[in-house]
Image 1: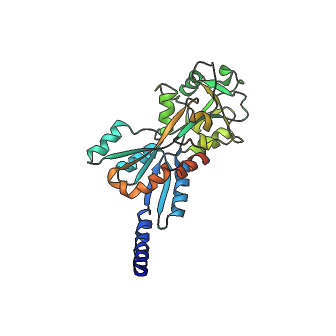
Image 2: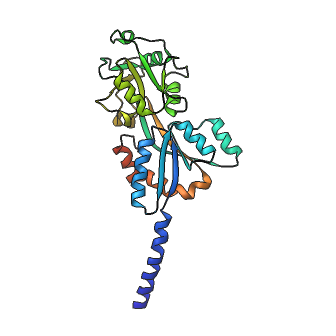
Image 3: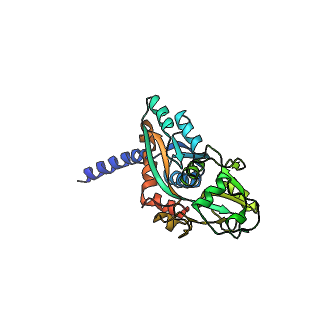
Length: 278
């Protein structure tokens, strides 16, 4: 009996390193600036709790991450929009299969300078501002002040989402100032009295910028961007956040993906200002 217990203990001790090693993840994540703070937190916690793991995360925009995935220079593309058909075709043409995972949801906040008395806008007014048809705040009940539009660059998934879901695929005004990162939008809006921009909810700092309530029913009701309203879908500018990776890489990244989708991972989503899956 004693000998059997010794043998069992030895077997367990031999299996433990293998089990721990199976949870080790070394990979690169690249893409969406919206996803960046969340992915960085995921990686920080996972690397800390799984010896030997080395998960690195960089931003640059959804399009940049997807291009990196297509060119084999990242393991995971983080994206605030769905992959476009031509991007998916490039993956298929290279003989690879694509995996898509929704990791969280996000509310897109429309932000203005805190000194701006305007606190709410309809979808029609937002579309008018971002397309350049509305150029002064007095046209939407504000002061006689020129509107300065700050936007993300065209490689940004957030740029695409606003264009599709707020502007009905109309073009941005030619006077829009394109910012290379979400943090730059926040900084610019916070320093410019007539500014307006858009950022993921996790980037909203109440002291630096003011988030507007939005109406998608012609002004009958206005809803503020926050986790509760995004979760119950009453806030209209809400979207999923994605991880894309090649199926052959799945065994390598699956423990990390499972962690993100777990209760612990989704608690991180909530703590970081994003919207959990359930």
